[in-house]
Length: 346
Ligand code: SF4
Image (tube, rainbow, N blue to C red; front, side, top):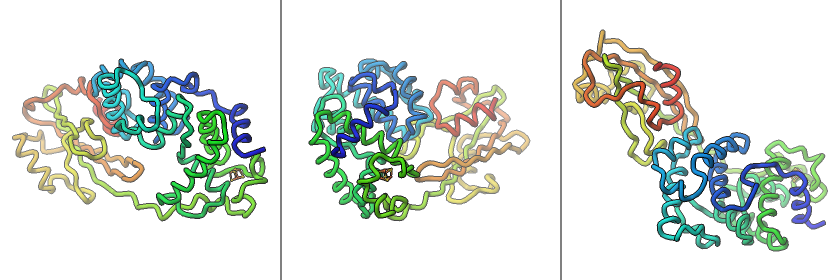
């Protein structure tokens, strides 16, 4: 049986019962694909359900506040995805008469929709023959075809996409075929596959050549950047504090934080850091008893390791423009700051 038919047959029997597979509505497929770009299915399901409950359709998403969308995204990371979802929903409602684009060519013009998402939506919802190549498909097709070139090169990515295109063109159901390849990579051709029981082992190049664990081949991974975040948590006599919004294009863009002193070294004594003293002087703040409490955590992102310290200072006088500690839950914070607020501030 040809590979494409084997995969489709396997998929129809083994596919997982996932909420976004209940229908071919482009809105729900779009939301699920964006969530799953950086999140495992097991974690993504609950986020998807919560998001759809909060924003059940594109009209609702487009008329919601950006801060509410960010709040629903809290914990998923890569907040630009939520910002772009919101922008694109407005674009569809305001400039496309609320009509979700139905072709790859029109989908890819939208903010936050790249080749992968445009291929997924156009094939699953509108039966276009566009192959998807996510990490699971890449792993499966490079192994099956014995491709030894680095998968982080554009050339290899194009080569794998070509293979996907040749396969999908031979099927009658491009959406199911794409999902079959992704599902096969996610469940069978995993990073640690059980090749002996794989239905494709007799035809798989990597298996026959005994090079499965060498593929897919990646060029050396870039070392994660280490960053040192020192948060100044001021608490005045009325239990008010100061927060600020992250406005630079960086991680956690548009989320809130306590005043930050970022250093390029691990701080032993914050009082000796000039930018800390500059900040305290600019706020005309008097620290009570000249003491503070400190909490350290390490937070690992895909390309960065954050060494975060929270310094809690009690102030002698009220903080002008301070906000109530009890009202912090109304603001969007990144997960490590949110955890600190819940566990250490109350
Ligand atoms: S034999 Fe192993 S490497 Fe080949 S497709 Fe099956 S699971 Fe993947």
